[in-house]
Length: 355
Image 1 (cartoon, rainbow, N blue to C red):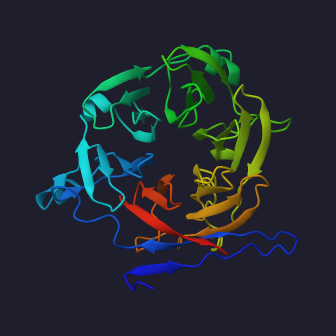
Image 2: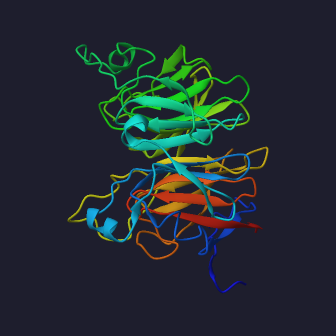
């Protein structure tokens, strides 16, 4: 094995009634190639995405330590890397892109969709950043005077977003799916628009009887090949699955167990289902979920929701560890990429096969 790589062996679920092949990975410590660009310094990476060529796009929030700029230059808001980890280009005007960059998606035409949570809009760019092709929404306000969850969502302009967190595109027809509600107090809805940005429909997260007081925070959204919409219900530590019309299909619970005593501290407040990605096989057999409570990546069987394993080495700044992981992507070879908000870096976990 290449000594420059750290082998990360996945620990299988101990359930004797469930046997399945499980992906395993190793950390590629030589990816990306550094220094990035012209001695670029990145701030928190708010999100990332991977295109059909296995190019990786990073969303850089530029919140750096100012004194560090004596020895570096500020990295641009959008950074594109090739499969080998070399910088292809960096671009973006932070004033135009907006604040709190949070998620991105590359569609079948290689257009790059970017979510700016703080400024409340979704932008569609040419892949090289030379042309802004579409902008949907501005930072919205909403009337919550009736005190209801539906009132907050439905009384806002339907194509106006309030703290959007994620975007995905239906490759069958170009419909735009937005998780709108990055923080409590936002619209807390899934909004669907057509490929021209015109509002089609919306729905809230599902709440069963007795869950009315459970805060809603749709923090991610991804569409599967078999017609389902996966949403991170972050405050409930689960993934909610809907059909494309918004009918709730099921929940996938994502748990964790604290390793230190919780007697004198809060525990579990970050969420176990923060962002997710599918494995690249046609059946999308596996879900890869960033669990910010355990600070690892959970590998779930998509159909059953069973946790098969986890990888990463928990919280920390050493290789293979994470500091507030906030973005995840998978390329066509099955390699998994993790972008860190506080770690301010991207790490690649190379797919080794199934055990």
